[in-house]
Length: 197
Image 1 (cartoon, rainbow, N blue to C red):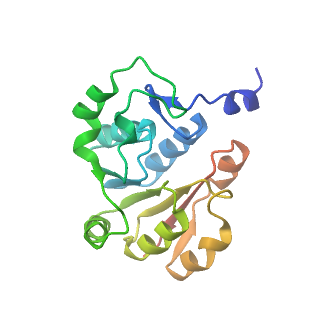
Image 2 (cartoon, rainbow, N blue to C red):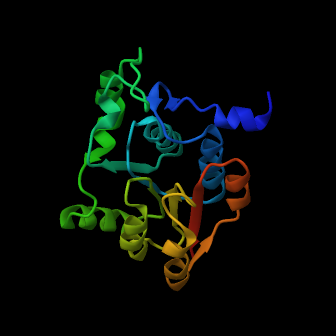
C-alpha cells in the first residue's frame, strides 16, 4: 500500500470516537509537544471527541492542563464521525475521561472569553482552533496568547486561508513553526504559530 493511500484511508475514528483528523496529524502534535515546552492545551471544537481523547492522554502523560470547548456534546453519542453506530461505550468514556475537561460553551460569550483569556495569560498554551468559525476564533483569541505559546488551526487552506491570519499574526509577533511542509505533504491541513517574547 502506498503511503498516500494510507493517509486517505481515514475512517474518522480514534479510540472509537469521531475524529476529523488524519493519523499524520497526531504525529504533528507529538512533534510540537516534544519540541515546545507548554503547560496547557485548549481545544476549541471538541467534535466527536477522538482528537480530544488523544490530547487528554498528552495532558495526562505530560502533566499539563487541558480544556476542550464546544457548543454541542457530540462526543458522548454512540456513533462515529460519520454517524455510524460504534460498539464502544462512549457514555462511559465521556463520564470518566472527557467530561471533567469538556466545556459546553459558546466561545464568543463574554464569560467564556474571560475564562479562556485567564488560562492563556497564566500558561504557555497550545490553543488549537477546530470549530466552525476558525478565522473569527483566531482573530479573537490570538491577542490573549502568552509569549512562548502556540496558536494553531485545523483545515488550513480549506476553512481558513492565509489571508485570514498572516498580517494579524505578524503584528502580534507570531512566527509559523517549521512543520508546515510536513503538514502539506501529508495533508494534515494544520498550521502552528509560535509567539515570541
